[in-house]
Image (cartoon, rainbow, N blue to C red; front, side, top):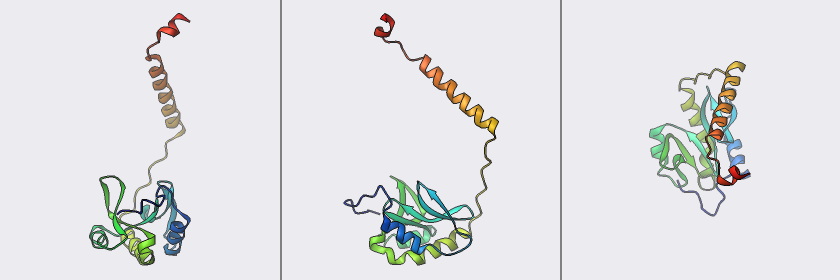
Length: 155
């Protein structure tokens, strides 16, 4: 989907956030978090609805995404060039904002049928300390292998 190049698409605007908030279902299963540093909603630890730059994304499944992508202001969500997320439709709220409440409900229904993502175990203090120590050792080894310039030898 192409977003207007004149618009600053690197940040979530107040209008996009307002459209996202207004469309977000009032369901006790909905958990609000951030992804890519932008507001998103999750159910069973699965993202189903959120903001991305100057757009809103909804996880409605690949068949529905293909159908919606043909409509003005909608397309397959592609957070990185040539890496589409086929389960997500990306919506330009200026063009297709009226569809957001229905898409949010559809996305919640779709994602709530997916298996819950397992929690990743948090590293212990000892594991964190070992990782920090290894990182410091690697940095020290890299500094030690830097060639000394002729000027430093003379000093």
